[in-house]
Image 1 (cartoon, one colour):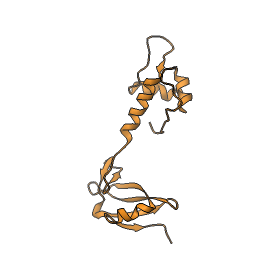
Image 2 (cartoon, one colour):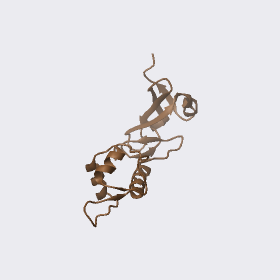
Image 3 (cartoon, helix red, strand yellow):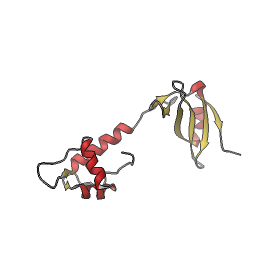
Image 4 (cartoon, one colour):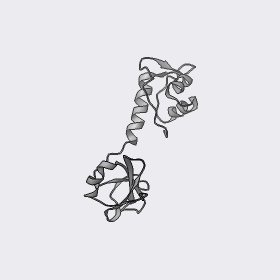
Amino acid sequence: MAKRVSTRKIKKHRLYGYDEAGDALGVTSHTVRSWRASGLEVMATNTPHYILGAELIRYIEDKQATKSVKMALDQMYCFKCKEPRKPLWAMVDYIPINGTRGRLTGLCETCEGGLQRFVGKGDLGRFGQIYEITIKGVS
């Protein structure tokens, strides 16, 4: 699930067809059908198939919960390892996104792949105690 889907429009005691579920979630009906293959329970004894709202909410929340990664203060997310890692030699770059937020980037100490972590500009002091930070893109 590449797009983050909100379950706020789903009523848990209602039955949904593929088209209705897709419209309520803002995805296509084909996407909802594909979720069936990856674990969404569907009432398939009759045609058309129906999905219980509570089951749809459970499926989406379970999928989104597995995407969340908890990191310690001295860790960043490694794109190659696909898990939190410490940066090589504790050296990172801060790249501002806007006036209040930016991202820390570095190299993974395990695989030397790219690391990243989004941080607030006010948190740079805390991270500065852990990392050697170079601020990029500021003139």
